[in-house]
Image (cartoon, rainbow, N blue to C red; front, side):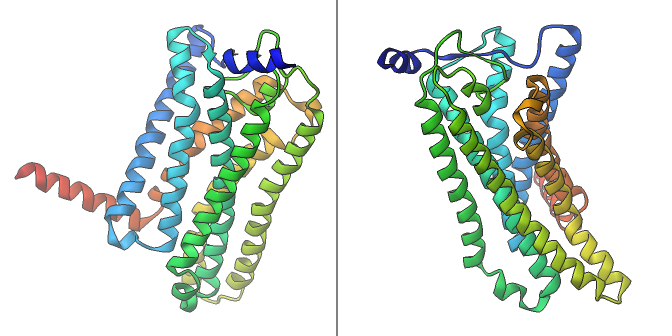
Length: 315
């Protein structure tokens, strides 16, 4: 056992990746890199706009800036290493690097899932109690919501990383994924990990269903409020307020439930890899687009920023 543990700490792992060097895979890799760059630029720009424009200093945009920060960190956790390995031809990752990927990935996914759930409560207060909104969603409440989301994700990420990286690993140590995905890594353990996998499954169910239940409860109350509205304009405003959040929730929870809530016998590594690409790259790219292209305030802030740049360049 001691030899295995020592070997685990000194040796790294081999990431088998998702792309070969065929023409079709080269095209797909290029598409993923374009999506990665768009996700990177989109989230940085979104955070910058929210920070710079006083009109966007509201609870909803504060939550969105935190969501963009999580997305930004998520795309930077796995994609650069995947790209470096693909372009260099090397497939290795160190033991420490593998542990960091697991910890960061679990932390960010957990934090984002809870934040999306609590953002539904924000939408409920905005629609059902508009007059009391500034009191119910004051600065202290906003900080508590984001702080609890980050704390929940960090604690979960650290616990899972410590447990997974303390298992002894042996054999060829080839991870059938493009990053150190926890379930793929556990298949390489030299000991029985079935109990831990059951605990992880229970944690995933809780991490997904707890925020999802907040979302369902909030939108049930929102629906009740909307049905009592007699103005078509109020209907449209309520729909516009919720549609972006509902789209982001559908993308995030759809991919997460597909990956983590399927029975083990239905798991296929190739399916998990494709779903992970969607989950770790495509969703972070779409989130700022969903919240900006359909939002007049963000587009207005973007136009003001571009006008400032234009005036500055003329001087």
